[in-house]
Length: 187
Image 1 (tube, helix red, strand yellow):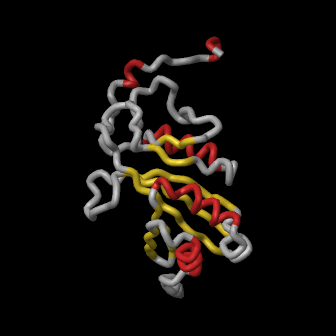
Image 2 (cartoon, one colour):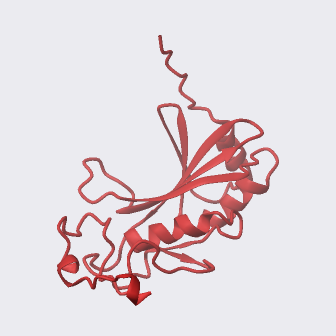
C-alpha cells in the first residue's frame, strides 16, 4: 500500500533565500511534495550561485534543464516560456526546482532572435548544463548568455524554426520534403 508524501510547503531553502536576497522578487510553489522557486531572469545567476555554494543549500548537482511553452495553457502564467532547473543536494537527499519565466517581444513563428528570450547560462556553475541548455535553445529558441558553445544540438544549423514551440505546425513546414538525405559516401 502506497503512502502519500507530506506536502513540503515549508521547504527550508525558501527561508534561506528570503534571508539572503531580501531585495529581489522570489516566488515559491509546491506541487505533490516538490518545491519550486520562481525567480526573475535578471536574478537567476546570482540565486543559482547561492544555491550551489552556500553550505546550508549545497545543491551540488544539476539534474536537468528543461524548457516549457505555456501557449494555450488554461491557467494564467507569468510568461509564455519557462526554463526549469532541477537541482539536487546529495548531502540532504533533497531536490529543488528553480523556474524562470520569459515572455517573447516579437512573434514566435520564425527563427528571429528575440532579445526578451535570453537568460544567463549556468554552465560556469554546473558544466553538465552545456548540453541541456543547447537543447532548450534548439527546441524553444531561448538563448543562454555566456554559454561556451550555444549552437543547435538536435536539428541542423539552418533549421528554420524551433520545433517544440506550440505555434510550430505538427507536420512541420516542409522540412521533411526538402531534407537532403546523407549516406556514407557524404561523410
